Image: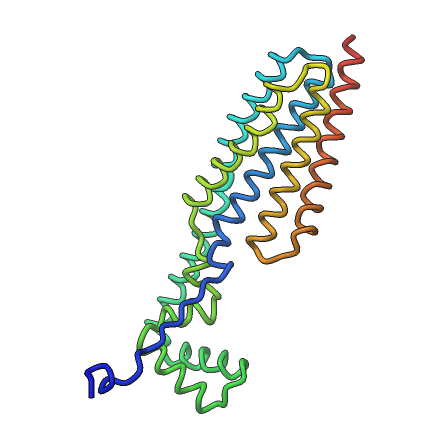
Length: 241
């Protein structure tokens, strides 16, 4: 009998990859890219509709790219940092309660498991064993709903938002450079809507949602924003003229 046969069948290692593992950076990236396309394209369309020359449109667009990327980075960092502060405060509260009222915390954890369908005796045993291994981790996961996947990461969210905004904003600016000046508004509008549709479809695909629905909801809102801004620019240009 070989060594492998004496050992028995090899252990099966089952590794799963879930879409929720990417929720932090995916949300920030999609939000940044969408905002980059919509805000920069709207700004470009508004300035171009006011009969501004191509250089003025480019300056406005570049300024919008820089300001928008920095704003997205700062806003995302502040927002996610606030979430992280709340999570740390909740964990510190649980740590104090575990140190001062361990029996109450064990009973609370057992009650959670009973509500999920375990028998009272099994729920008590599970609570005791999990708290013996990692009491704070068990309460963080099952009482507070905090997991490693969903934990707030301010720097990651900030960097993803800023970078994706810059990439999204660069798309309408690239069209401004190559489009014939008389057709600049049409070119920027059409290409931006196409980019939004592609972004919505990609985000929906990565998230496991319907591709068509994801593309439509992003495109409709983007079209509304660009249409309103272009109309304001045209009215302002006519008033100045």
